[in-house]
Length: 554
Ligand code: ATP
Image 1: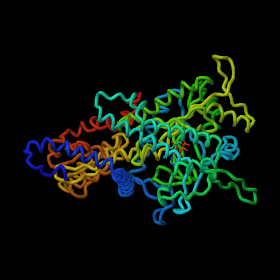
Image 2: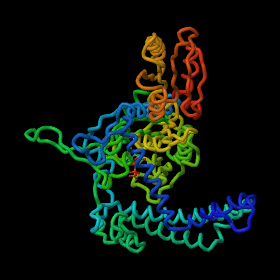
Image 3: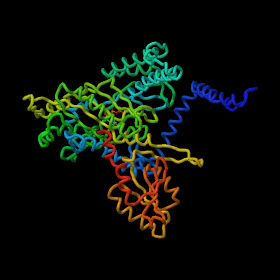
Image 4: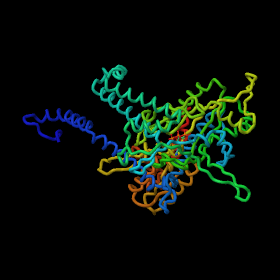
């Protein structure tokens, strides 16, 4: 309103000069309004909803058992989803086993001896504290509610800092501001006090104290808005099943909640048969199962999901250096995708798992906030020692340089394929306003991860153009994933390819039959260039290969 209103007696030029200032003031005033915060949140929720429906509409992710109305927290990957997922896995696998001479892979079984889960501590301690809201009947993880509250204090601090940075410009001394601004200090004190109380409660697993924190912090249920909470209870996340018929005496086994234990119990096999020397790593990709209390946010938290884990065995005493190295290496792997460094942050753990002496998460900026995508843990020699104790085997490494045996320490990198998939989709989903006023939805996937690399389109379905298109397809399909598309107008075909993130399209027209050239269209710039068919492979292959990503992190 202000920006468009005429101000009495002011000349048109002055209005022009004043307009940006008035707009700024209006935006600033609106941003202070509590409604703005809600709108912002709503906007992000809307974006997320769009991404979820886009995933279904374009064959990336379907609810599992869809025709039976789905199964909570279980999803299937469609024709495009499986390609994207496989590319993510390939990128990870190759970054581990191709780029590191001292890392090898395995593929262990999902069913394992039940004692393994006793030894690892999962039977006794793989629990989440749960709490219910009596009014909404919704269930939450008590630790997540409190961590969200800590994040709220952090957000408040960052907002104050951002405001001041804008106000003071180049003269802004952030360190001094953080140390002296009364509002920032107040939020910091509240955050630190809560953090300390929470860490202590989690370390002792004091369920009454966790509830008391929720009450004292006046945390409300996001659905009902009330503080009518039940007591906090423990809940074991492992799925149980039985092997063998009952007549034979069936025994209870578990669906593995992590792939890591399959690596630990194969440590001796791999070390001996591969003649591996410390430091060395074992990598594995596979399914894991957790009976999650709260299964929301699409494929972020699933009951059946996939992990990519690598256990790196090191000499005791060197683990902290390796921990730092792997923190850096893993962040570089993420950043090579080109989403921008601001999309990631480390989050050091307040509460260490029973086996760890250091742990950090790599968090990604999802539409619903920064969330863990990968965990990096220094697991000490806990797992190998426990398996030695429970199995009665000697699980050690003879170090020829030191002429002594020891139980290796372990640094673990553990990333969820599905969360990685979600982060890629969230960052790539873009709605663009075109010059003609239309909106195009384009998935700006890193080319190396895109399900289809090249769409091959004859301009019309006659005059020998489809035959020429197939000829090109038959040559290129051996090098990267190509898709033949002849239905609808070229414009519609481009849109369909944009929506699944295909980085390149080529059009075969009548001239192609004479000059052996095609029109190559770039997904992101929409630029079209005429190129020789014989140059296509060399123009495209390098840009869409996993090697192009690997070279960035090498
Ligand atoms: P969270 O705190 O979110 O439950 P976590 O710390 O228990 O995760 P880890 O045990 O460290 O997770 O597992 C390693 C990785 O496996 C996580 O970083 C995540 O990417 C993935 N992961 C864990 N649980 C799930 C799940 N239920 N659904 C999808 N991915 C998961």
